[in-house]
Length: 187
Ligand SMILES: [Zn+2]
Image (cartoon, rainbow, N blue to C red; front, side, top):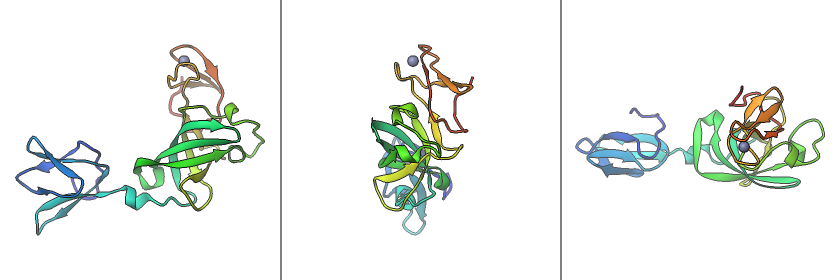
């Protein structure tokens, strides 16, 4: 562990004899461990090890921030999502923050229904379209944005991209999405 690294809950940061546990740190079996996602900070004078929560440095989100979000609920023309990662700041949001995606922020060509392009449980790579929030208004216009991982509408298994089609490896169901050029599972 060194200062500036991002640690996640349960990571061992040192041993009990070295430092006292400060904010975000607890003792478990002689080890100092992280209670939250953060960056370790060392107070050498008082020999206290604490975590600076990374959430504070990533929020508020601003336009052009690139985020990962999961689709929680769709009701045309709006989808409600939970933003859990900020790619350009390499920061997890714990807890996640809320976002919305509207049918006008999907593509430069016309989209009739959100159900044609995203699905419940999908992971999206999106960007923040306007200042203000939460909820943050997101967009997936552009090749690199869209669904990163689609979930099967029947069994929720992550689907594989084959050409332009998504296929469920478990139940063989097929689906279409507005996929990102960075779609994770192929073949
Ligand atoms: Zn399936």
